[in-house]
Length: 361
Ligand code: TTP
Ligand code: MG
Image (tube, rainbow, N blue to C red; front, side, top):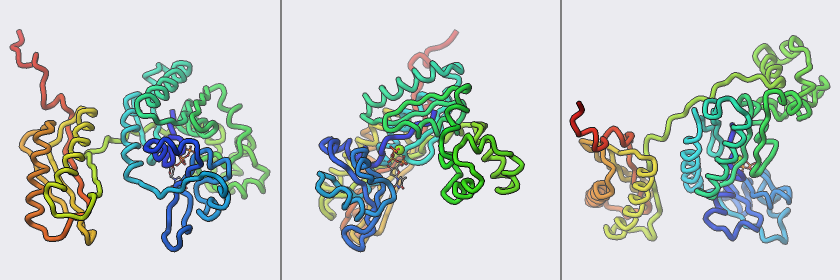
C-alpha cells in the first residue's frame, strides 16, 4: 500500500482551526522580499478548484482567489512534523514492514497480514482509514497494488480520501491509458522526447521496442521505462527505523530569564513528551534541554541516567535542574525552549512483568 496524506500542510492547519474547512486555504513559502513574493507550498481542495496548487507564485494564487474567503498562512513545519510523526506511528502498526518517504507518504507491506489477498487488503486499507480518521482526524488516500510502483500510481489516481485497489490481473488495463508522465522518472523533458516517438500513454511505452528504448535513453533508463510501463517493480518496502528521540520546542510568551516562566513552558513540553513515551511504550536514558536566546544562538544541556526510566516525575525533575543550571551559566534572555529525550528503549526491557519475579519450576 502507498498512503499519501491529503493536502497535508493545509489539512494540518484545518486540524488546529476547523473553521478553515469551508474556506480556500493556501500555505505559502514567503520569500520576504515583498508581502506577496513567494510560492504556494500546498492548498486545500477548495482552493484547488480555483487552480491554486503547489508551486505557483503567491501573487497569482491571490489573484485567482480574489473575492473569496481564502486564508493564506505561512508554513509551520514543526507543527506539520508533529502531526506527521503521530500519523506515521499509527500507520506503522498495521504493516509487516513500513517505509516512510517524505513527510506525508509511506509504503506499507501488508502481504503477510492479508495472506496475499487483495480483498483482505482492501478491507484492511478501509479499516486503517477509518481508525486514523477517528483517532487523529486525519484523512489520506491509499493505493493498493502488487508492488510499490502500482500502489503509488493507484494512490495518485483518486484523491483526496481515495482508496484504489489494482489487482495483479488489472495492472495492464489500469496503467495503459494513463499519460507517461505518471511514471516516476518521466519528467517534462523525457515526456516531450517520448512524444516525438509517438509515446503518449503508459500503454504506448509498454508496447515500444525495449531495444530502441535502450538506444535512446541508455541501458538503465531504457530498461526501467520498459519494466515500469509494464507494471514490473521488485523494490522491497524497506523498513525505516523509528525516530530515536522525542523532542518538543516552543516559543516563550516573552523573552525572559524568569525561571518560573521558563519552567511553566518546559513542564508543558515535558508532559507532552511523556504522553508520547507512554503511547509508544518506550523509556529514555538521556534528557536534554535546548535554549534559543534573543540573539538566536542555540544552547543545549543534557544528562544521562544510569538506568532507563519512563517516569514523568524523574523527567520533570531533570528538566528543571538542567534549566536552572543553564540560567545560572548564561546571561542573555531566552526566546524559545525545548526538551528532548533520547536513547529510547522498548519498555519491556526495563520493566519486567511481575510474574517474571516468581520462581519458575
Ligand atoms: P503532496 O503529497 O505532493 O501534496 P499534498 O499532500 O499537499 O496534496 P495531495 O497529496 O492531497 O495531492 O506533498 C506533501 C506536502 O509537501 C504538501 O502538503 C506541502 C509540501 N509540498 C511543498 O511544500 N511544495 C511542493 O511543491 C509540493 C508538491 C509539496
Ligand atoms: Mg499528500
